[in-house]
Length: 79
Image (tube, rainbow, N blue to C red; front, side, top):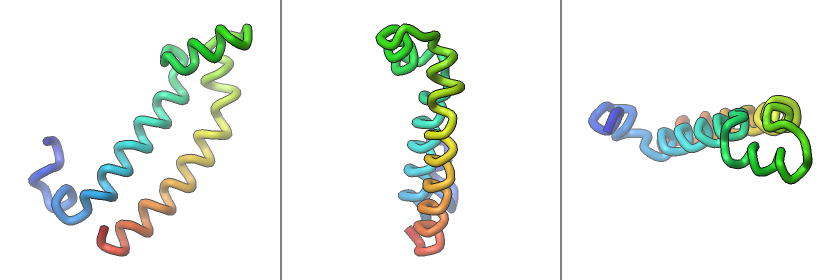
């Protein structure tokens, strides 16, 4: 438990969990060695780097913008 006993982990556990989940999703989407990008690239006949850095770039940008807004709302609401 890296942040469990801290005030952030105790007072805003939902915000912390959502932040970690969104960070994981963004990292998997942008990593050319993730299984998702390797399989997608293989099925589409393109490199996994193209899938990760070209195809997923807009998705990750939108994901991070919307997630930041949602996490800010949850944090300000005390969740």
